[in-house]
Length: 327
Ligand SMILES: [Zn+2]
Image (tube, rainbow, N blue to C red; front, side, top):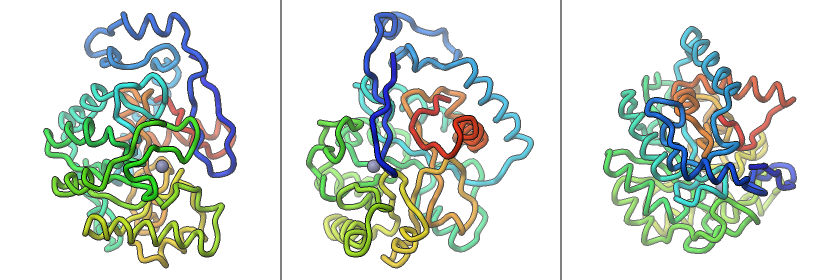
């Protein structure tokens, strides 16, 4: 499968979408089932070809995890998912339900506790020590498949998560960008969100129109921050005091505006764990992608992924948030 980069301006989400799928890729997807215990154990449900774990990435992850064991930093990872849906062939941000189920099982197997986003924000703000072996689950954009797939799995396990919603698109198609993960799929309705909120899931603003905030000023920036929160709080009847920057796009000016809009914290997309109050206005999150292997997932929840992401970024020459880290 060749991956092609869509053109995107500064701060825009850079999605690597397949241009073509080779015959071999399709054949492997359908017919090759790895032996149990191998990396990519659940590849039965995963797209293959270039999504298969690469030996170099796996070796680098292993080295980073060894390094992470020696120089462990105590912090809480926030995982960032987009869609959990069965049509994973089309987009790297979409994780197959069977893979998601397996990942949640690993968290249970490894003894991780799921912490709420507001609980983490509150601990950081109060300079309290963050708990060990804890993880926060977040989902960007509020796709309707969250209701049918991810939330079902989490409910079975007693897990909760935070979902970030661009309020202008509630119940409508995710059409803010062409070629987007799950284009054509509707976002959650207010009724579905109300039901999920009653079951312990939390909903927070992701802007009104999902525009990159560093490109906005004055009333436009203000509207994205304030109106999204007001609408969400009004419709769901619960406080929504954490923001999520669309595309993880922020700078000091935007962070200041989020603070002035009355939030307690805001999420970005820097791949690291969270341990300090200084991170509250750009909370680190690690994206889980269709290409994330078992080792890559373990590296994320143990925090070692930050070394991997940094090394990859150095090799590529600068910060790179494209969702293409295949570990
Ligand atoms: Zn988004």
